[in-house]
Structures are given as C-alpha cells and as structure tokens.
Length: 276
Image (cartoon, rainbow, N blue to C red; front, side):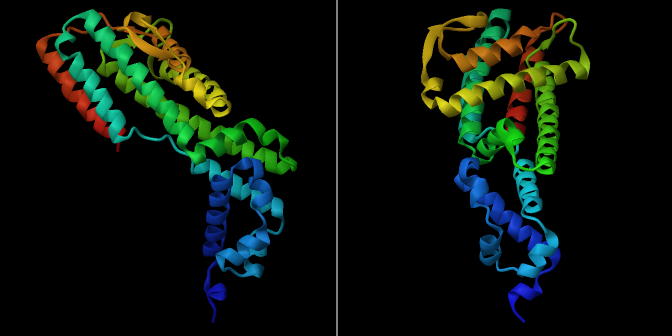
C-alpha cells in the first residue's frame, strides 16, 4: 500500500492547501494563481488524484479554499526583541521626566513614532501580508462570482479580527500611559472606531510603501504633537495624527511616585505580552 492510498481526506486537503498557500506566499499573487496547478500540486504532495478531486471537483473550488486559507494565516505580527528593546530605551530616556505632563507627552509621542515605523516595516517584510494586501485590492477581479464572494467574506472576517485585536491593544496602552478618549468617543466602541481609522490609514501607508519602498526613509526633522525634535516620516506623522487626535491626557490620573513606578512595571509587562 502506497502513501497515496493511506492518506485520509483531511490529510489530503491539508497537504494540498499547505502547498498552495506556500506557493502563493513564495511567488506572490501576481503570478500565484497561474502557479496553482492542481495536477502539479497533487504530484508534489504525494496524494491520490481521485481523493484530491473528491475534495475539490472544480479548480475554482480549490482556488477558493487556498485563497481563504492564505487570508486566515495572515496574523498581526508581534513586536520583536529589537522593537521592544528600543521602546525600553525610550522609557529609560524619559524616566526622570515622568512626573511632568510635558515629559510624559514626549515619551508618548516618541514611543508612537518608533513603534509606528517598526509596525509598518514588519508588515511589509511579511509575504503573508503582501498577499493579503494584494487580495484586498484585487479580489474583485477574480474570475468566478462565487470565488470573489468567498474570498471577499474571508477578507472581511479577518479585517474584523484585526480591528478587534488592535482595539484591545489601544485600550490597554491608553490606560497604561494615563490617557483617555476625547469626546464623543467613549468605551469599547470608541476604541473599535479608533482601530478602524488606524487600520485604514495603515492600509494606505502599506499600499504606497509597497510601490515606493524608499518613501519610508524620507524624513524631516520636526517637533510635532508636543514631542522632542526627531526625524519623522510621513507614515509616522499620518498614523500618529490619527491616534493623538482621538486621545488626550486623563486629568483624573494622579501621577504620584507610586503611580509612576506602577507605570514602569506595567510597561515592562505590556512589552513582554506584545512580544509573546
């Protein structure tokens, strides 16, 4: 009995989907669909041709599952050790200024500038995100009506998941730095709305950076948002503007020595969780 006949239907599906997703990620969406040849994948996967066609009677059925699986494997990428170390350096640099509103504002602005740049570059470096972005902008051109609808729904669901995750992060970090939402934004719905705006801005940034990668390195020395003088990119200014327009220092927070020490501890814990 050969390996081909021993595989279950689920194993057959998984092997073929794994190969198809990898092909899309490796070669990009521009040539990816042409590269997804079911017969070739069947041979490479070492599965039964009959089993494969029982799983997917039509090539468009297989394409739909492969594209949806590619979308679902796209995740928010956590900060790496270098990103977290840089944020820790910023906290240390402002450590003796946390008892003043100006010092805290400078910390918030500089941390935003650095983290935004790191976020954009992490996403650009991810081949899964490149395919996700390409599908988000071109899936309406897919050749089959059902295929377009299926992939479109998967994109909507994943975008909703990204929005929810970002909202959780924004809500936690806002409390951590002693900020609050400006009126009329309130509660969880306000953070979800902020997350949606930030996501739209990030998508525009990524779209431009994909076609003009050197754009992220074009910087101007400035002091926006009450921060310290630094070299800002347009991407950093755009996303920081969205966030800081809707957040403000919380006047009810009493920055006592105990509160400052707790903020240091909470920051370290948050950094660990973001990098998990």
